[in-house]
Length: 291
Ligand code: 13P
Image 1 (tube, rainbow, N blue to C red):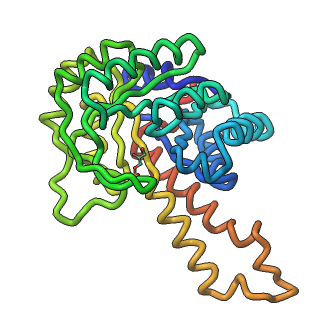
Image 2: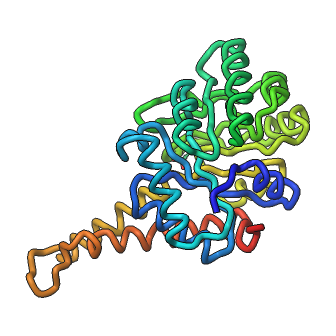
């Protein structure tokens, strides 16, 4: 059931669990996340970066695929289709294309410009029934070829952006996209506490969910994080399962086994994504929380 993400994240905040945003790249990814959420009775957010949308030929294609799949699979748990790290133009395009939620990432603009663009998009998104996430303090690491240094968000700036009426807020607390370096110092819980207190308990978003130790994930949830983004984790397990299948010779041109059939070739990766999504939902505490 496609919905915006506002209600599911308020319920998560009040119930002290987090909803996973799992980024999608193609049909297999989408089906794996949707069926797992349904089997586990968990709310879920499908994240789509602008690069992934381009790969799938555009926002309209993604929205049409997700809507049709949601219906064809008879998905009854709440599902939000969310733009990840959207540009100003991309956010507008997703509203028009039928997404149910957008993120506007204005963290790389001067603060006043982030405020003015976020304000405009909050009004536009809410007029059309979408939820909106904003960002303060760039999340570090590399995603979709865009690299940023990790920042600790300023609680006062977070309070100002939260007051614009955004539904949930991404605030940097030392988290980064991709694989964490060996000498990573961990999440800054003192910063999280200050941001949580300054933002009137708006649901907070933890980007860079791959590789954060489970105890830190749980502590972050206890301190106001209600949405956790996971992308690289699913890519890693999909790649490993697909490589294993090929290395085992199962994709060989054997006319009897036909292991090269894409539906067979992609199945181990699909199953690996399902297992990873289940594992993360267990840690996030969202299983059985669909309502
Ligand atoms: P990871 O790729 O580190 O899991 O981060 C995902 C993310 O934050 C998407 O916005």
